[in-house]
Image 1 (cartoon, rainbow, N blue to C red):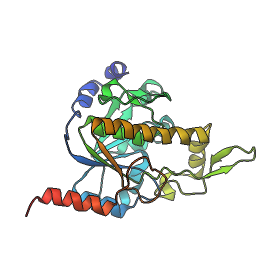
Image 2 (cartoon, helix red, strand yellow; image 1 turned 30 degrees about the vertical axis):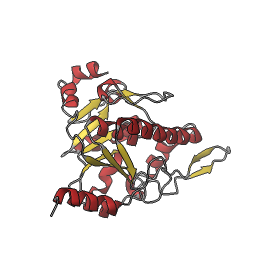
Image 3 (cartoon, rainbow, N blue to C red; image 1 turned 45 degrees about the horizontal axis):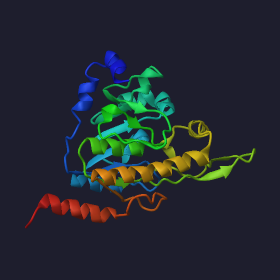
Image 4 (spheres, rainbow, N blue to C red; image 1 turned 60 degrees about the vertical axis):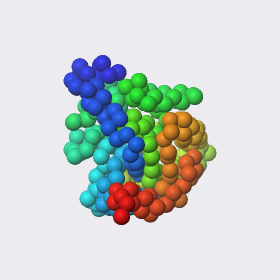
Amino acid sequence: QLSQVETAVPGNRRRLLELKNTHPGEACFVIGNGPSLTAADLDRIRQQGIFCFASKGIYKIFPQTAWRPDVWGVSDLDDIGLKHKELDKLDGFVKLVCTQSYLKNGILIRDAVYYPFIQAERTPRCFYRDVLRGVHFYGTITGKLVNFAVYMGFTTIYLLGCDNTVAVKRDADGREVIDTSKELHFSRDYFDSEQERIKVYQNIDDLQHAVEYVNRSYDDLKWFCDDFGVKVLNATRGGELESFPRIDVEEILQTERKQKDGPV
């Protein structure tokens, strides 16, 4: 995948390599797009100067805050296809895009760094500390960002806005589908239209399987990170992600503040 992308984006492999172990022993946030996320939290994180990963439609919250991620990522090909013109305009941070954006759909995102993506529901899941060997599907972009955080040397990872909640209902055929009337993101304006919202969610063939797969992925991510000596803590308010120990955002900010200020 990387060799093929290199022909269209010379220097891509080098840019990936330049990210490796750039933040050894540091702490970071992986920000999700769940309904619990607030701009106020992001403002406080920005004030502390804590490194952040974020993904997909996080830019929808930009008008409410001066905060910006340090690294942004996407792997959903449907999302890329729908939003590539908007994604071209994003700047000021590293943009990680799966190689399949170009290799399968012929879409190149301006200034993006392309990573090799294992686009399959492998079981058991794998976790390569070296992302050049491939980043697993995991069923969620959050897993891929955790993988990149480990690659970049972070040893403490805080999750925020990773609610992992899916509202479901049964359609006319009795099949479980996502209830699009319920809020699944931090803003009702996360999608540009109701038609777009419905189109994205209807592409999930087996909702129950998808939810179970993601939950198992989070369990496996914890196992791998524990094995690597990387601590992952969940600072999300509420939600259903229980694979990682819980921690309060205020506790994180106080701890990071003390570490930066040093001994009095």
